[in-house]
Length: 339
Image (cartoon, rainbow, N blue to C red; front, side, top):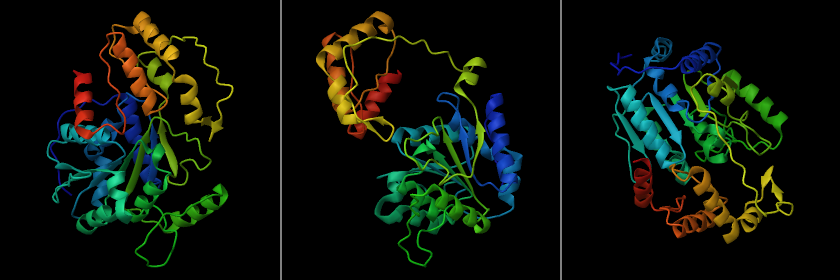
């Protein structure tokens, strides 16, 4: 174990409570733990603080090893860069690097921030290379972990030693088990927990643990170690209360089909993405929030471009940003938006 000199950071009371809860979960041998906190309350700051906790340092010292101490997995480039900046700021002596696409982590890294797309591509080839060099990761953080029930995440967790393989043979073609029956899944994971390695921690963080499918997150996590509600965060003064305006339109959603508990995207886009409604949205924005920097969430990519064009038609600078936006343009747009 090494001692790391760290920068001074001020943790809020609920963030300290979240860290206490993570330690308690480990003490009770629950090493797949989920933390729920609203957007804007500093989830990244919580897991960036783990190395400063004496209890975590003592736990790490139980299994001395070489290699990176933490792997952070996320699904968007912005989340990777945000996590790297925050962990570096709070832990000045740690080497933090990113594994994503054409970016490769330094082999001497203490913390590796990786995209799930990169780790899971070509049957987890990049993840296997990381494990060959670093061995197992004592701490794995899954950012925005409401995505973690998907096959790509669960297969990565199998390689990382947190979930059982679908095939118990020694085959290299490892996959995560697929559970259509929640009762079957629960029995299988109960049996797995009796023999699963306890020398590693999987920490999931999210603002929205509820999924629209029937599986939920119990196919990955053992416990919700800590939950901090949106209303409580507002009541405590950490978040500003929302001020909503409801604008009535002529759009009728009666014919929009429901798919997996949500509106069918194609039907919804055909119903709400039209010139009249987009103009009403822009005019209402000018009336209520025209002096504010604004994010507009749309049904799909085409709707984003159509709404941005409508804004520009009113003389407002607006850009459409989506997963289809090239990386360089995406960075430029986000940089321009935050300045």
